[in-house]
Length: 269
Image (cartoon, rainbow, N blue to C red):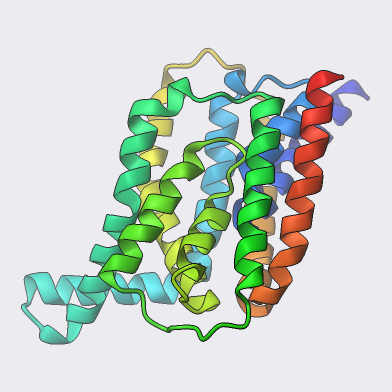
């Protein structure tokens, strides 16, 4: 029975990772909160976090497979074959790279110095709530359809703060885009494609750290968590991309506020 309960906990964490990685509610914040409730130590779950993040990465890669394929093909044709028809794809890829440089550098130098307790996560979730509420208040403005170089730089600057546990990466990039009046679907596409770009080196680094950790591996639990992360990330991105509108962000804002308050209360309990 104890072994079954342990497996169920891993399944729940996999589902949480899958959903919260996509929705603007902070996967790191939720994993910190539920790991506390389940009695898990996140510092001893390096491989687990890498596996579940890979599940989300593969789900997004599958969902945007046509866009990714076109961007790779167009960029290749423009750079190698000097085909001008691929210039637009090359420019878009360049903007994605620019947008992920800040979070890449910030994470590389500061990730080991960031607080990751319930108190800091709680306040970070409340900040995410405030940002989402702000863009919700701008819901009636005229939206733009293109992501410019300036937009990419600003989104990258916002995304940098997603390294703080409790700050939603999708939420902060969404905020950075919507504040610049970019249409929601364009922001979501740019946000998730930039996630794919930054996930490649992060996954490589995660593999390196995994081989240098003494973490015990629960093979069944980790495997099920990976599957759940993939499935629920795919479900979440389809729902978010196809149905969520700016006016719906108020629900995510309230949710982050509630979860943030719960995290702070649990810190003192």
